[in-house]
Image (cartoon, rainbow, N blue to C red; front, side):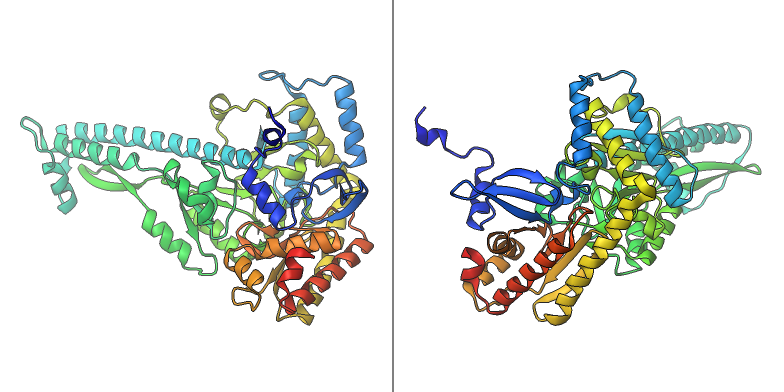
Length: 528
């Protein structure tokens, strides 16, 4: 094989080329705390302040010494990685630790069963898969109940009960008229046919506009960004996205999607056609802090409306805490700030302590279906290495009466104050500052009409945030990225030990960026 072929980029080559064009194609060789290191042309290590934090995966920093030491001990002791379909007491220990936190933060005593996974999207897909199993089992029970009622109605009519005839029952009784069948038999047959068709309808999911829950076949359907979702719409269930700034919108969507089954009720010597609610709504999936939508904290009043609406239609709530959870908001669960106790909570990212791939889905005890354990499995889920590290990560977050949560809140407030001051000073450049704890967003005004061709083209292509990120990396050794579906917004997700000097360095770098942007100096943004 010649050298030209050997050097050909085969690992996502288009992405590699695009990153390099913006100055983001850097190869990091070491990571520690809140710092990543790469080498210059002379081989000297260059430290970079990391504000991306593995998209929320490093709440305790890169290569946290305590976790690394523990991980080494697990490997040195030959901890089983592949011991599937056996007893895993360490997994039960992690579930109990997180249950204790749920009980503390939500003031409940109901247990949550834990299903382990490997990734963000898988944890969310576990939740929706379980929710669909629950819906199907409810639907099966309802169908059996209706079938029993049809039999009772047929027997009652044979014993002299009278069919109460209205327009609906009259139409049903003549539908599919067959010789030799009585009116009640025709009525029951028509109901069976109609119900069979209605029960075959696919489930409906609900999610707020701006949602992001992964990019697998199922989870991408709950990702509002059409660019990620639309090419794969035909592969999975449909999701209705709810604009939370319009209080009436959720009720209208529910009314649009409601479906019923038909049943026969026997009462006081009569048989009447009645309607039964069809469990069509599978789950409402949401993030307490929307990450990829631009770091948007859900409004408490909107959350209350969601809870009331879901309770009325028996629709479970899946709370995606993959990015906002694990202490980043100043509490283990960001949803606890909103009084949002879900039927499902999903965790990942920082659950692995920054070095392991760990995820889990917590399912409230009351809707938990034990059948799920026999129809769902995952090869790498619940392995000894990642699950034990998850347990140690939870221990470190809970240590010293939750000092990590206090640090996240304190460091977040300090960084938020710096960003807020920049907005006050440079409101013509910065549109808004949002977030909570160490999950913050800085949104820049649209630059689609910039006098700089470079800035204008990048903005119109939806890449402004990446252009700004490339400048900060090259000129100020600050690593930051925009959010996926709101690319004018830069995300800040550093670790809890963010230092004052690092915050000051970020402030200086952002001020320099703002100055260049004010001057509409696209060349400097692209090549500095």
